[in-house]
Image (tube, rainbow, N blue to C red; front, side):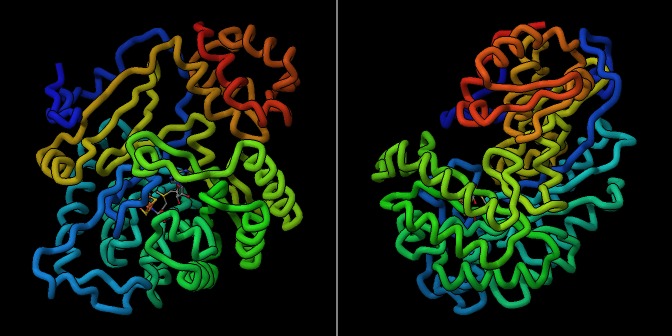
Length: 436
Ligand SMILES: C[S@@+](CC[C@H](N)C(=O)[O-])C[C@H]1O[C@@H](n2cnc3c(N)ncnc32)[C@H](O)[C@@H]1O
Ligand code: SF4
């Protein structure tokens, strides 16, 4: 039994197993291991957004009013003062992430890293020197593939001149900017710490400093009209971005918006917005290669593609999730969520809060949940290789999906149809109870 904190979170690490435990015989037979990505979670933000259910924690204001005054100008918002940043112990956290990584190394011996994603929270709150140190420490312990993509998330509220180029010099190859909207009223309604001018300046700087970058945009915002969605997307496209992620705003449980729901557009309006987005992005030469992701040729996100294709990922940092394959099993892990507890645990040698083997019967659904988000679907061989199951495990569900016009297939691949893309959760659900 795992001891549970009154908040509902586990407080004791799960028993750390010898690598032999993961290698023991089992019912699956994986002929090869998939590409392996690394995810690094940096959990702090200037302010918690009312819609956000990510593991992100507001940096806290110090008690003395003087010390809390922002030291204006450095970040768009005014860089939080030094005392403010004390609530975000960068160096200790970086030590903890590296200790966490070292403890996990035996599970990934001999494997090279396909991509790295530094996500949050707001990773761009960390100093470029700390990101440089983190990437150096990672490189000293892991072999990165020659074309390893290294993405970092940035918030325009942390923008300051030369900061983004310093991240590029530290080795980040791709910046992902959380713009959300270019409309000041909508940014305010979303509780964002930045305004339109800061968003424009941040994107301009990203385009200057990075060969490839991404903009996160959200639509179906409180009070937003179809015309305003068009204005946001048109503004984004003016920067000729190689990649845009466009998300429908969802009201997530346990957020401020769940407690005090804003007025958001009706479903029919949201569908019309998505149609408009798809038209505008296609006209600009961006392909909708995944439900929410649009890219120019050669600029798809390698890291997210690996998730969607049921690749492996080791997640280090507070609350990070991992999925790791072995010859006879697929294992999922979760690190401690609360940053201080995580640091203590990781520096103590074991940051694992949860671990479970994916049940054989759950593998088809887990695979489909991601693979069917891709416009190009998946290869039948990939399904067998990554799940260790025979294709017969999903044959009945595939026939049903085909009969309903939700997928099309040939001897090698299965692809969602337009209709399948529009009714994605119905399509995914067909694979729920199809045990091998
Ligand atoms: C971890 S955040 C990105 C970086 C940074 N924290 C920021 O917000 O600027 C990842 C992205 O998920 C999207 N997102 C977060 N919560 C969402 C929600 N409730 N509905 C739709 N998209 C959401 C936002 O577009 C956000 O940029
Ligand atoms: S800045 Fe990003 S991670 Fe932080 S609270 Fe807002 S949406 Fe969540």
